[in-house]
Amino acid sequence: MTTLENRPGPVDFDSPEHQGKLAELYRDFDAVGMTPLWRTREGLMPHHPEPRAVPHLWRWSQLYPLAARSADLVPVGRGGERRAIGLGNPGLPGDPYATPTLWAAIQYLAPRENAPEHRHSQSAFRFVLEGEGVWTVVDGDPVAMRRGDLLLTPGWHFHGHQNVSDTPMAWLDGLDIPLVAATDQGFFEFGPDEVRDKATPDRSRSERLWGGPGLTPVSAAGRPRPSSPLMAYRWAHTDAALAAQLELEAEGQPGVVEPGHAAVRFTNPTTGGDALTTIRTEMHRLRGGTRTRRSRTSASSVWQVFSGGGTVTMDGLDRTLEHGDVFVVPAWTEFSLQAADGSATDGLDLFAFSDAPVLEKLSLLRTEVSN
Image (cartoon, rainbow, N blue to C red; front, top):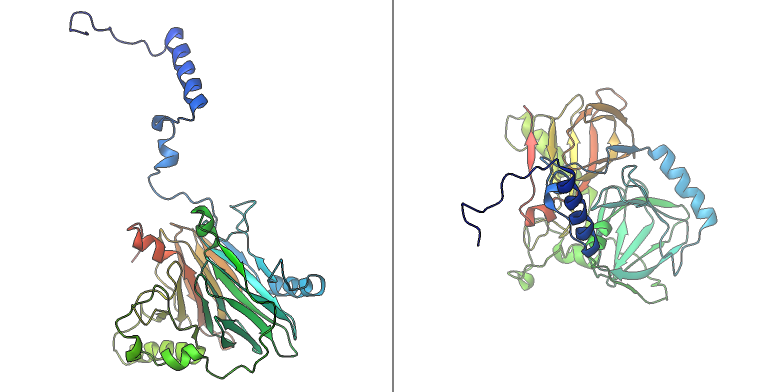
């Protein structure tokens, strides 16, 4: 028993004897797989996010030609399944990921080509930059793909693509592949090998049932679903909503995010929440000459220029934006947008997706906006 009379005196932490015992302790820690917090606190609990992913921009003028070249060399079929080319963040070497939670890719489908059906636990969407002639089938429901459309494939829904036109088509793929991989939740299953040779209806089955904004079929009312039952969000609706916000602003009415900046979020009509459980999808429109306030958030995001031009500023570095360009904003990166103001490229439309829904559910999302 230690008493005031016989307890050890002050330890000489710099003595050779103490240092030798300390080195032995650390060796014994290593041998059994223990790591002391006092040696790793700054890495495990930083004062603010320190993402490995870095701000980066991919030029559409480079992405599209490379995707087209791959069509001459790589067939679409069982095994590879898709001609989808991931955009790897330079800060995440070895991983084809845009951020630690998001996967972004350019998918290219040549004329008269079919991508076979499959399903997986990862949630996915397709955003169409340009073109039409491809339809995707989601759990047996054929859905046309056209410029400006957002197409959903929630986790574990069978889906395949068919290009019935004489021209190629490319689009932006987004998935939560890194998140699912990090949590060991990946499942994959092949679908039927036969091609569903059917005409593409102007409106898919899900659009016929859920296509009216704010209108819920009584047969489905009161039964929330984790992801949206609507598989297509059409550009005509998105465009009209963005235009209306800016029109209301011009009339002195509220509705825009900030002056000259309209935005819409694609939502699940059964809950009002995000259309996909793990991915937030939005469309933004900046009036010509508009500059957004500087902001940063603990969510990471990927953006694609749909039309117009401008500049994105990330951590103080300006990058010009042109049609189709894709850029990534890692967690806690300060950024702002500037829309061009000229007759040829007046204004700026951008599609964006992020991991914000996951962080919200975990009460981890944090955002700061500068005045």
